[in-house]
Image (tube, rainbow, N blue to C red; front, side):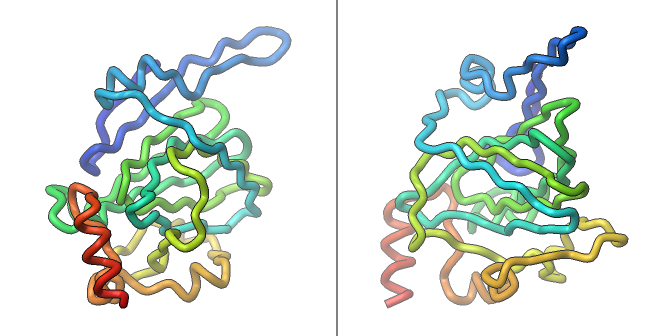
Length: 202
């Protein structure tokens, strides 16, 4: 398993070695030893998620309020996806920076999304399957989003693809609106930050 730091602080890319023969292949997209070596701690898996998307579907930009917060380990098991991380953590040394990766079932490249970092991807092929290991269980009230077509962020979606969004993502605020409403996490994510967010929301 090879790994490298990504431009977003705390984010990493992992590339396992697939073993191929006449039967097909075997690969381990997540390996705890390599993860701990890169990140400096183990990854707690509370839930696994699986999405299947038509070509052109954009999922994101998603993040989870703290608590509970949520870290993600993401790879593509079928099709092909362009994966984007956006540092939206106020005070982060890499605030506003993007990290982009091609995910596919040939390399089985994976990305680790730290707590508070926005995550999105676009499916580049029909029936693109993305698998997620996540550190906390799904909490609907904590799920947050930023509009993936925000012109300020100018995410590098392919020009030739007509984007397909969920109703929730299409209604999401742009980054400036989310910041004005006090929705963005701070760096590092903390309980004090969450308490301030709740107070502003009330």
